[in-house]
Length: 260
Ligand code: NAD
Image (cartoon, rainbow, N blue to C red; front, side):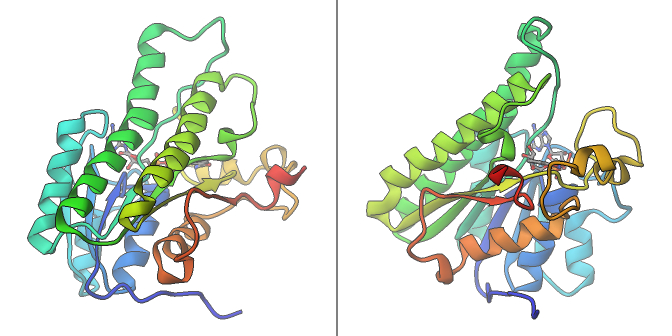
């Protein structure tokens, strides 16, 4: 089947967490579709590649910048969105940065709980706020896409705090969609299932292979782990005019996992 690809020429896209994994692929796909891309990540050096995302985009002839950003700090997210003004202002905001800390209810510490909620939930909330304020101030339509998860819907053992952050992302998405519709700003989320990245803390260089292990893909009807590209395609669709009547939605990209 041919690839779906939208045209984002003239658009400026801020992607949080675009240094590695899913965010990096989202950034590359937007750049290939003609967008200017700002990578707002706490680190510039990818875990899973040699060349930083913004440098790779420039090597391919695109326009990109790295803006060092800790998404758990609302002021730093606002600064990243402000930087987009140098390129005409943010048209698409992708709140993708996230981390995983495992542990059961009786084990999780207060510090761990605060850390994961600060990045995964607070970071998405203030990413939505910063982008929406900028779009409203400039009087432009826009799209915001948040990275939710299968964990927004399905509880798994030893994941209680992560799951609660991703449930928050789902409701931030719906609440923001409700409030921003009158400004022609659509807010959606993508819901990855088991994706082959080095996401899980402590996973080694073999992490993508581990994500494809029989045990982890057993519950996936399509019978394989997803790839960052699977998620990026869905994000580009949600950002595009083809999704003009879609808002408040969590588009699951999980090989059918949630259906079982
Ligand atoms: P990854 O670890 O490869 O990439 C995460 C990126 O976020 C990294 O570049 C990291 O530097 C950045 N980041 C972490 N903390 C940050 C902070 N405080 N400020 C700014 N940037 C920060 O992981 P990934 O698999 O690409 O995950 C991306 C998103 O997808 C996350 O929100 C994750 O929860 C979600 N997700 C992943 C999977 C999966 O199986 N990989 C499944 C469901 C959801």
